[in-house]
Amino acid sequence: MRASAITWDDALVKARVFNRMANIAPAAVVYYGVELIPGVTDEIDAFVQRVAVALMVVVTAATLNAFLAAVNEIYSAIPEYRNRPITGYLQVAMLGISLVAALIVVATLLDRSPWLFLSGIGAMTAVLMLVFRDTILSFVATIQIAGNDMIRIGDWIEMPQAGADGDVIDVALHTVKVQNWDKTISTIPTHKFISDSFKNWRGMSLSGGRRIKRAIYVDMNSVRFLTEEEIRRFHDWSLLRDYIIRKTSDIAQWNAQPGRDGEINADIRRLTNIGTLRAYILAYLGSHPKIHHSGYTLMVRQLMPSDVGLPIEIYCFSNDQDWVRFESIQADIFDHILAMMPEFDLRIFQAPAGADFDRIRAGDGGGAIGRARAG
Image 1 (cartoon, rainbow, N blue to C red):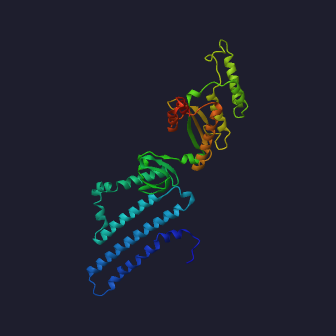
Image 2: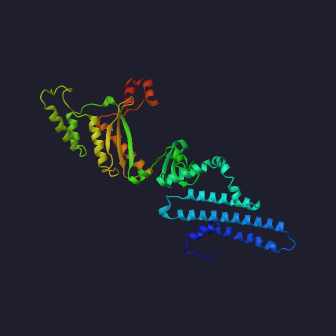
Image 3: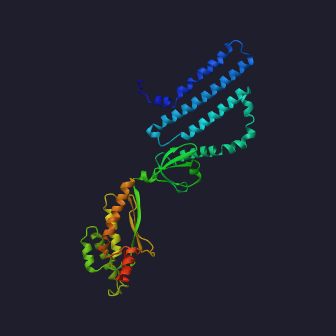
């Protein structure tokens, strides 16, 4: 069979719309042909016709549901609409069609008017509200999700209370499916996205930047003032030259104020190795090709000291959002910073490990503990 150039008809065939529609013909034949059979009583004739009508109603409802499923597939195939699913709305329509069909089938088989059954629905409202509670909540949630553009297919979301951390792969009436990074699937009730909090990383993806926020912990015993020789050495570094020139000029003006004794450290300002390290990291990040330099926060700050050292936090944004490449960029930056620490005579804080205690037992003395704490 040769395929046509039109693609939407393939969705109708795949959903078996025409196959289900063809089932109306046998029911119609029975409906009109039973009267032609000799010897059939009026009661049997009427009963067979009611069954045939009920069958045609069921087939019509199944055909309409299949058509809506095909509409959903055709809609999802359009690139500009792929991120705005209408599955929830179509499922509500399918549910309505099925309920109406069931009502007509029962009324037809019992030879009663459908309005007779509808008149009793008012008394069953409380029961119906209880039975369709989740459906009603999910339908309202679907409208709010679509109206507020809260989630789209392909969004990376985090919902810790549901154990979800990955990409949204389906948004239906009752459930939202999330494929986690370990390739497992989390199925979350749609109304949970209205009642519970979650994190959507779409903003990060659209912004063009991904945040790096990590600290290194410096042993505070290694913080000290710079010597004149070190200041001259750092002056030769291209990344620190402007900082050294500006800072030494500011310090010289401060120290030249009347009443300041240059021999007393408490009276004057001096360059420190920890401050120079911060300046170096800031200059290094400012020249890094994978870091955003304008419109994004770029900062190297000192956090509150603790029992694990003095945190020096790097806060910046990479210009590559891909997870694997982002982690590589972040690791390269900290590899370089950690390797440069001895240049500033600073030590990374690290708790003593098993090998450190082995050296102590071997007679290395208390100095091993000091080196272990300093890293």
